[in-house]
Length: 385
Image 1 (cartoon, rainbow, N blue to C red):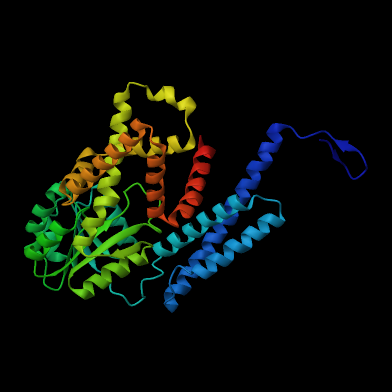
Image 2 (cartoon, one colour):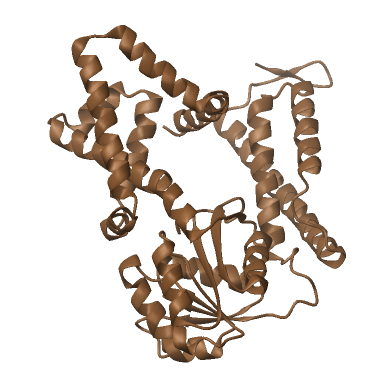
């Protein structure tokens, strides 16, 4: 469409390259605005640290999202997409405040933290986490000159971050060198056995932890970590506060409760993903042949399965084989699969509907949240494909 000039004439329509260049210029302006916004966030972090204010203010975030939603509607912009953009901005703001130590009191003494396995994937993340909060981090691994026992003797906090099959041996190695006024902790995916080993190996404080996320996460903000207190409340409080200050959501549990729940959260989830992947690989239908027919839900399942099998089998094998309740969970899976297969083979629609209703009742109100959140995920996947 031609534009009218002040003297009543018209200008030719802008070409596609001109329009794209104008969009690029606006995007650069947006980035400048975002940079200025983040500078203000840094000032907010400084104020919060000086006055002992928590990073996250749920009411403030709700007010921001409501206001931006209303303004988007008034401007004719898609409110859902604009809200998503501002949710990302708010999360980035919280993460930036955490790296600026907004929840670390100005008078808190930095600790010396030894990360045994600090060159591993989770180890590197822990090194960054404690470093972000101002602690002195000693990195120990098979390729470092610093040994595990020397580091444990020098550290206020010794973190064991090694493969599950080596965890207890490393605990027995470093435990006797941990001072009585210091802390020994681990980050293993099972908890009862490592916690028992730590309690036996050291007279210092003991805390078991389990990050419920992998090393490839883009941000620590909002990620969950389980904390299992074992000995020494003061150090347990320090651990919980430290993780919360870096933006993690802390869930406290006993080691036994952790392993019972992980039998479902990890073992069952990984097992069913492995069964799906193994079935697909053995059906004889090439994956590529299914892709032109894929639904968003099928594609989401494929992403989860392919992501799973792209990772280390030693990690998943240890998680599933060392959980004390694995046999119970896999047996329940087999029984459920057999029961459902029998119903389908008989063509028994009433029985099928009964099973459907039983499971829906189990999920309860969570079904509404699941519909909402999964629709959001599916929309994002469709956008990127």
